[in-house]
Image (cartoon, rainbow, N blue to C red; front, side):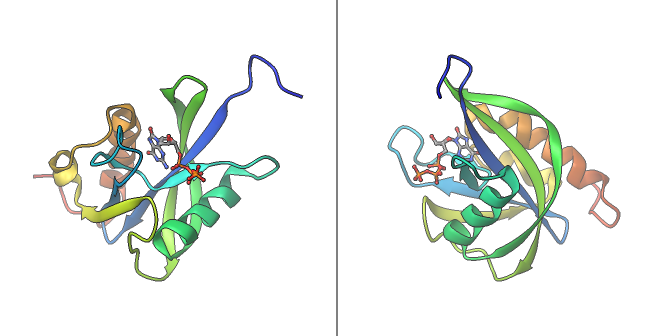
Length: 142
Ligand SMILES: Nc1nc2c([nH]c(=O)n2[C@H]2C[C@H](O)[C@@H](COP(=O)(O)OP(=O)(O)OP(=O)(O)O)O2)c(=O)[nH]1
């Protein structure tokens, strides 16, 4: 059954590795291409957000991922779509832009603004960077 409150949840991964955050540059659709985002995608009917993230990271980046904790909150993307974000660690594989992206970058906290994030992602990315910066062993911000 559908109703006016139905909306699509897009799950995004704040992948942390060696003190860096993974950023992915979208290759499609044209209105988003060239913008940087957190890898992920739509949760399918009957799927948990965590399973959706594992599936999307396998499909898009060719990695196995360990979904850790949700970053509280959600961010509107476009009418009917919201972004929810989880912190993620890599279990195996090296991320490659296999699908939906044409470039990847690993960003230190002080490098977060060196890519052109999709506007709608910026609050979530800022929160992810705050968490990354607070992890033990993360390089101090310049
Ligand atoms: N994955 C992802 N999508 C985002 C972000 N920010 C943002 O506006 N979007 C938009 C782009 C798309 O319109 C939608 C997610 O769709 P998608 O194309 O990545 O998801 P999907 O892999 O499940 O899609 P599909 O190709 O199977 O249709 O949300 C973000 O940080 N991550």
